[in-house]
Length: 526
Image 1 (cartoon, one colour):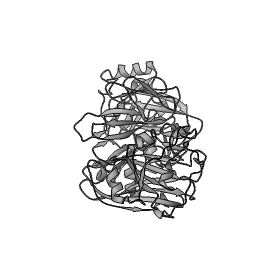
Image 2 (tube, one colour):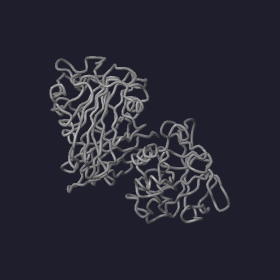
Image 3 (cartoon, one colour):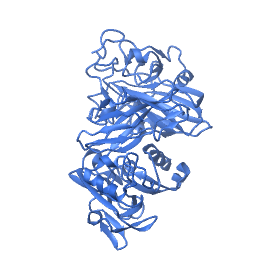
Image 4 (tube, helix red, strand yellow):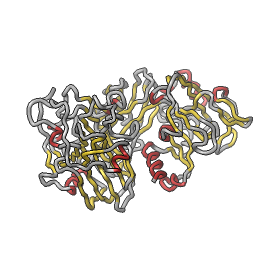
């Protein structure tokens, strides 16, 4: 339990304008042209002294706070912190907004909304924030899921974790636990019973023209129990963007992960990692995640991720600094992408079960015709949680049979919108990013054996008639299999660098990141 101290907030009631709030959170590479605020005058404002007053909670020294209640109830002014078990105010904020109802899946109340018009100088923009809620922990799995959403040019921007929602149902003590902080022991100076670590949203924008962004928070299903979002000052910017990394790690051993390789740095200074999952990072010092894995910052800016023996998906964040700007990146760690036993693979002799194939067998490939299989491996895991296979119903993505693949196994998507958005008519998309809970779903239960097909180069093969990828070796390969298997792979490909993954072909097609896949899905719906 810590002593209470009031977070200084200049509210809309006290004269803070929408433009003031927009200028507070927008930073380098973006020009604000106008802003409006809709909601209760006590539900929004600019906070200050965040690092001193609310350490471990506030994402920055200054920023903007929006609430479904009164922002000044985020902290107590005296006594001990978090003494109220049901911080709740029924405000005069917006009720029953259809856009929010659709996003939340239920009627919404007490909404606070900041709309900003802006002109960015690049195609990617980011925003750092912390979501906090009094609904933790008792209502984390209920229908009362207070909603925080961001819309850019009318399209909802998903979070790159779980189901994409920023709410207690997606981030809690059992789901995405590494990015959740439990405050029921009153260890932090906030009246909220739980909150996220500092997170980020990466948004695709249209450079050099007018764009719009809507930032909103609302009560869901009732007007009780408050939630807040704190947006870091100057964090809505285009100069430094830490893109989400999807990596494969092994349950035991160490995997080297280069999270900076895909980050966007429009500044002139070198990028430096300062925090891992919200904790200060120093070279050589391991940080243990709530899920048990250890992450160590290496001198070259990469991470060493040591498994704890569990077969599971997990995530964590890192903070990167280029001397002028900061951003927070997300790492989604999971197993090696592969086929499920029994999957029929096209060969010159017809379709054969993947578990009946052997090295030397010829497999039909999309780009190079029949190609010899150089190596095949397998791995059995419990088909639970994020390791449950993805079921793609017959003819969902063209003419093909029912198919089961691992969550990260990438599927070839042919789409004119992909060419418009990414400059490529054919792209590879992870199966998990195609889940729609209708024709593409997770299938949990029992055990599942995944198979890996390796060729002289990365290939697109035909699995149950659907075009999907072969195994693409990378830096994780050496730590993703038993020693004898690794030795076998490197004996076949002696030119493959175990530290970098270089020495093998690039991906057969552009591989979409999770936010890009969501952008493609949103464009198809629009």
